[in-house]
Amino acid sequence: MALSSDEIERYARHLVLREVGGPGQARLKAGRVLVIGAGGLGAPLIQYLAAAGVGTIGIVDDDTVSLSNLQRQVIHGTPDVGRPKVESAAEAVGRLNPHVRVETHACRLTPENAPALLDGYDLVADGSDNFSTRYAVSDACFAGKKPLVTAALGAFDGSLTTIRAHETGPDGQPNPTYRCLFPSPPPPGSVAPCSEAGVLGALAGVMGSLMAMEVIRALADFGEPLVGRLLMVDARSMRFETLHYAWDPDNPLNGTGVRTGPEAAPAGAPLPAR
Image (cartoon, rainbow, N blue to C red):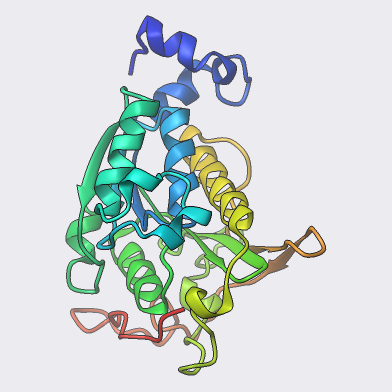
């Protein structure tokens, strides 16, 4: 996919990178990424994907901008309070990079609508804030054979991994699913929502930017993805650690006991919000 003269100047710092160059930038331009959530994680993620020249960004969010969002959801501004987040985010992308197409989905992703929402996208980036959506997204990505970059935020900590459970690893074993890492959600009430526990605003920027890095590396085809690795960030000590995890043969998606046919994979059930 050819770049215009304006795009060549815009992406000049990418084009001189050996790992990206013209072919990598063309892959970014041809890329179609679905972002789940235009909040704390989605806001910086969307901004950096747009700045990098990802050709099409789909945004799924059913919420409106509130004043308490603005401490961390930097794609929105004070005049946007009360507006649908997908509209505010799309407008911000248009200001940042007119070469990027935005597709808005003003709805909440569910097990029922997930297949249709994911259809036509190359990769999914999940920045949702509740367990119900996370499991629905990860199950749908497995069924639809879509790579998934997923992250989560706590008050002072964050985590990030890439799921490519529809593929096999170098050892010939299936790659792990989200359910290999987190077989079930925590008990109801055990994790306080953001409105009660709080969250460090700049941490959302760090984790959203790391998500963008993982997406860009996947689309431009360089580096080693976080498959089977969970990156954990502790903002209080500024410590980055990596936990390795593997395929669980008992997982319900691609485990050894999974049945084939219409009842093979479970849909994400309603789970407690975080």
